[in-house]
Image (tube, rainbow over all chains, first blue to last red; front, side, top):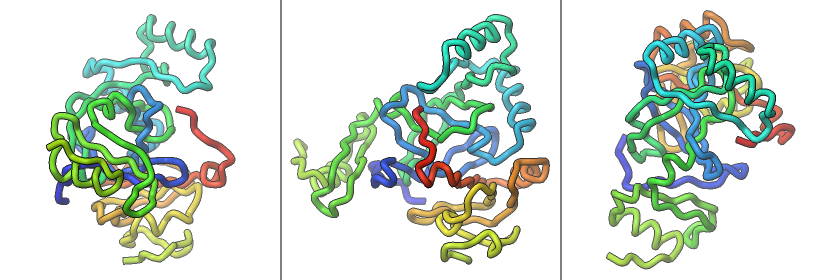
Length: 183
Length: 85
């Protein structure tokens, strides 16, 4: 696939979805990820990514533990204090396999989002079946704009890595939002 | 390739289909392999169809690459549940 100089996504059901390609645990995955500016850390649920049984997912979680991948606990707004306290104790007791809130960081993973290539650390949860989210840990590295396109009337996310701002991206900014390029 | 909106009874393991064509099939796990992103869609060969994820689903992933895992949750589509991550 030809790499683009920017990332663009059209709002669909109140979500910005992107077609993503990612390589994890030796397999290349193609799937639909959601851009989420309210998510602090990108989350990739292994079971959703691969359609595998819970037992297989736990085998890979054990691999992540054995490989001593960095991990952190992660929750949604509905998780209770009781759950968080229980998980904290599980981690303290080194019962990591039982703690479903853990996500393990895989370093410097190549990811393609709607044809736009980046490399970034990705955190994988091996227990949950939530959406696949690209959060602000990745999006903070972008210059991005959301709004109604002057060109086609669609509500768009348009972005580009800040360190790789290019003419193609600036042209799209002008086309959709009327921004004038300073270059 | 089968590309119109498909029903569960239309598809078989081995069929080449697009992800979008499966968007009307709910609460069924479908695994595409050898998949490619084509424009706004993903096209691949069906390696698993099932109501649950079992050893056969695991095998479809273990023996193949370029995986596209599909599960359309009817409750999410109908707005009965939303995710607040």
